[in-house]
Structures are given as C-alpha cells and as structure tokens.
Length: 329
Image (cartoon, rainbow, N blue to C red; front, side, top):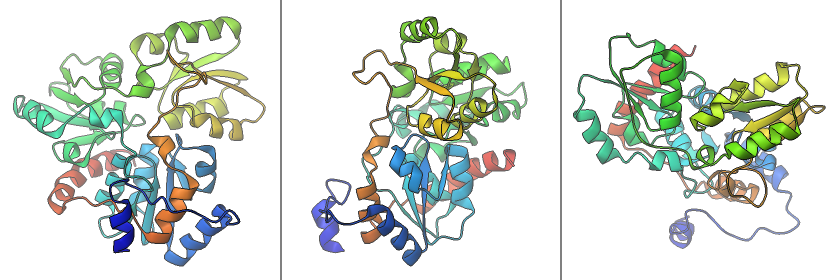
C-alpha cells in the first residue's frame, strides 16, 4: 500500500492498468460486499457511475445517508467537499474519493483565511454557509444549508438578525429576493457551471420549443432565474419533471441530472440549457467528470485516496451541519 501511495500521491488517484476482460461493475459489487462499503453518488456524475451507486442524490440527501448507514467504508462519487462532509458526519468510518482532484470552483471561491477575517469583521451576523464549502469554512459557520433547504434555513433565523451568506452570490441573491430580507451580506463566489448558462441561448431554445418549460437551479444568474418557470434544487428539479404535466423541459443545471430525468420520465423530452461557450451544447462540471468506474474500482481495491479531516475542525464543523439536518427532518 505504501508503494501505491508513493507512486500516485502526486496524481491524486490510482492510475493502474485494469485488464480488458474485467467486468468493472461486477468487480465493484464484489469489493463492496467484501469490504462492507457503499457508494454515494451525486446526480452530476457520469451515467454509468450513477447507475452503480447505492445511494444517488443531491447534497442534502447524501449528507443524510452519510450520517446514517452501517457501512465501514464510504466511497464518495462526487467532489471533495462532499467527501469531507461525509467524514465530518461519520468520523469513525473510512471515507474514500476516487480522485482527490475532484474539487469545486464554488468552494474554491471562498478561502478560509479571507472568510475568517470577513466573519470577524461582522460579529453580530449569523453565518450561513452553503454546503459547497470546505470543512474549514463550515467550522466558521453557525448553520449550513443546501439548495433544497436554504429558504427554510434563512427563514428559521429571526428577521432582526443580520446574516452572512457564503459563498454563492447567485443563490444568496435569490434567497434575499424570496425571503424579503435586506439584512444579508453575501460573499462574492460562484459556480463555474451555473454562471455560464447563456440567457440568449435559453431564449432561442424557448422560441424553438414554445411548449417547453424552463427550469433552473438557484445558482444560476438572476436573468436566467427570472425567465424560468420553476427554480429549485437538483432534487426539486427532478421531482418537478416527474410530477408536472408538461412533456418538454429546458434544464438549466449540470447536464448529469438529465440521465435521471430521462429514466424517471422516459416519454418526456429534456433539453440541456446551453452555456455561453461549448462544443457539446451542454454544461458539464469538469470536476465531477473526474470520477470514473475504473477509479472507483481502484479506490475500493486499494482503499485510497482517503479523505481525512482534523479532529478540531470536525468538532466545529459538525455543529452547523447537524443544525441543518435537524431543521430538514
């Protein structure tokens, strides 16, 4: 195992060759059973990764599963802050991520040192942070939220208490609009995927498909949200497409969710909203795409890369996450 770490620690994943005759899906299932492991996957993963997950969901659902399961090993098919959250909620379990390079542009937009100074400059504010942050940022927070429960979290705070919201400016501005609160300080961060949707491209698609509903994630820019028929979290968007009578949807969020939408509503049409610049006409998270079946197999086989969080950070960060989970029961 030390040889493996020494060979691949700089890469952040184990890039060993796998025999062409190996059935990765079967081998992953065998290793999970042998090691009492589970795979948690986000909706933004590649289709084949979604299909082998034990639990598939958005950030809130995966946080809940990470806290309540009987596995010895959690393999997180997602990005690094998600695996950190799983470790915070289950510190006694081994948490693995198939590629340590699977980061998050939104989390990276909120450096801990700068955010700590910002928080200390506004000591009277309740600090609400989006789950798309590092463990160090969560440790500086009073309560976390996901896009699923963000409105409930904001509304749970007394109206006269000023709020710091970080790191997503688009979600923060959306929350400010729907809650009617004027006493929110919003950190200037953003997700590179949701920032890049083309308003003109969406309007052109709507003109070509006048019967389609536009649905969008609240991390999108305000103009996109204002022309949308429905705004909601990843899970809420999925639910909307299954329950709404419309047969066609223009979807402004990461492309991966369309796989589940199509599976749950095979007779409906789902059109990815275009980004400003793209050759494929869809908007994908390059970090999410770093996770592959081959990397999941090697991660389970060698139990590396492992995600660890300092005990003092866990002790601080678990409190705001638990407050969020208690509010979401």
